[in-house]
Image 1 (cartoon, rainbow, N blue to C red):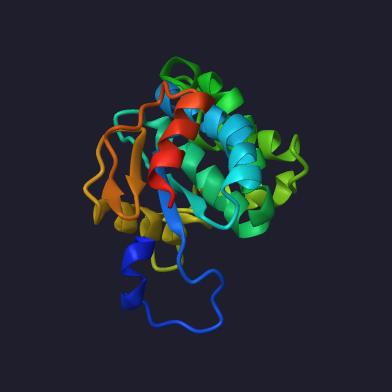
Image 2: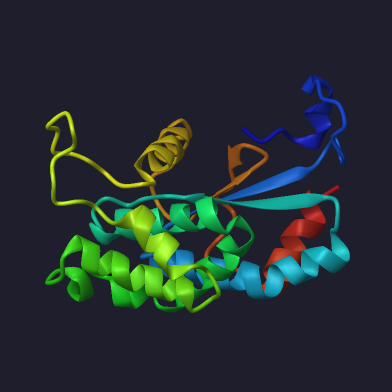
Length: 208
């Protein structure tokens, strides 16, 4: 969990620079239109502002929040995890592309295709931003054959990693997307409709 800089005395660490840093955790779902709105504002407008005005004072963490009432949510987040495994430096670039094409993975656009077909489209999207398409699909593909022990819920190459992310998110009790945590505490004043100017105003008041 993130630690507010004013409580930095609780941290026992060495070789960490800076030792105290504000943290904004963004709980986002790739197939949530409000998450898309927040991500685009932060990625395209707010982060460049932070680089020039608040450098070394605040960091953003993208928390992948699966919303199970959108069945494809699990699949698109698995693709995000596959990117983290193969090309972590391109995670945000891939996320931007996925949000741009997110409506292609909404309910009505996946209901009549197989799970592996959806994975193929996600791998192709990853390939469009310079990530190895074959590696991504290799991690996502689910076999139609039982495992050696006869088990049928075989999962794929990112299942275990996804379980860790879900387990971590459940500890916070986050339900809706987007949800923002500031230094580990839910910050309800931040809205998905925040403009760059509103973000700047909020950061000026809270990043000290």
